[in-house]
Image (cartoon, rainbow over all chains, first blue to last red; front, side, top):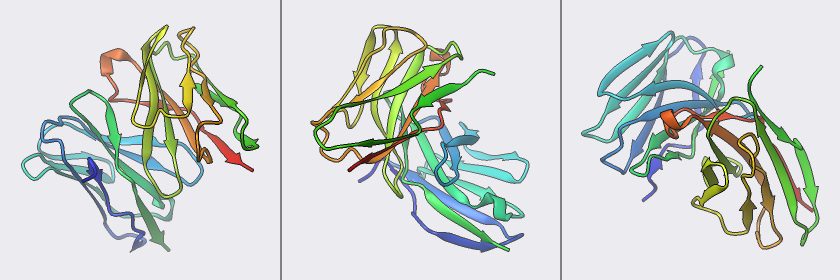
Length: 110
Length: 114
């Protein structure tokens, strides 16, 4: 079992819709969770971090964490074509190192 | 502006050759990392260094070597022992106070073996 799992996609949503990206992790002791956005051929950029159960909102982005279910998600409201990218979930493991999921490719169609 | 500079951006290598990827940061970060990314996949940790003159293997260190002689620099050598080196290589850094939590990435180096 991979430590951090994501559906590779592509996830296709129409412009203006809500995109929902999901991630599960195996280390029950993980405390820190991150979402990175990566455009094709570019390096990842941090867009959200979350440390406590519940929701965290930043503009059109909402990160949701459920430690009991070992599940973290990212919602993108009012999706725009410029949101089309690969979204990487990353989890800090017991060794205080980031482990990345394989990423979900999001396509927002005009 | 502070940041991480990786060079070269594109590199072609013949089989059996060693190549070195450069990574320089002016963020005064203590920790530096090298990741490998294959098409459609996430990032896998090759090596990391939390202090000058010290570094640790990551998940896929075989066929790679690094050095950390200066705080600003963390070059990665892809040796001929790496069987499938064609990939996108990313260098990153972080402050030790944040742990590996908040990474700043360079623009990446794309290595192709001919």
